Length: 230
Figure (tube, helix red, strand yellow):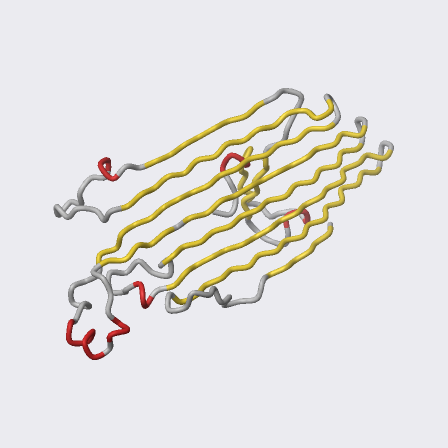
């Protein structure tokens, strides 16, 4: 999860070519995020899926033990009526699933010869993350608008490399993602014939993975940083 659904105001798919504002792509999905206004507004949500509500497979097999929950909310309104507004949202997810290991992989003779490979008959795979978003809009009269927004996302999946029943937790990995995004925009109208739209963006994204054999998280790639101006 890299952005909360509470942040999205609308989503548009452009199929006939995009302008320079969206990059040189023939087709692209464009999302518009929420912003504050003169009226106070907010929302709260909570989602859970109890194990008892999950039905068996068509062949009669019971599903693996699992827990799923997601909750968050949003809040926005005026700082200075008619001029300065804010919007913020938060979304967090906790998900875990018990994966039974194929009995053909659990070979006692192999474990006796190589004790470090010995494992339980199941392992727990998680997908946990959180997203925080904030935005401020400043209207300077009818011809100028300044906007600034930031998005924070963090994710960790223990035994998240694979949920195959032929893998054990000693042969799996910890998947992670850490990202920060900052955007500032100035839109202005000068007279009847000239307009300005300046956008500055900075993004830091660090995608990490580590083996379960180590207690440290060793990144598989260097953090990706990018800055753009339009």
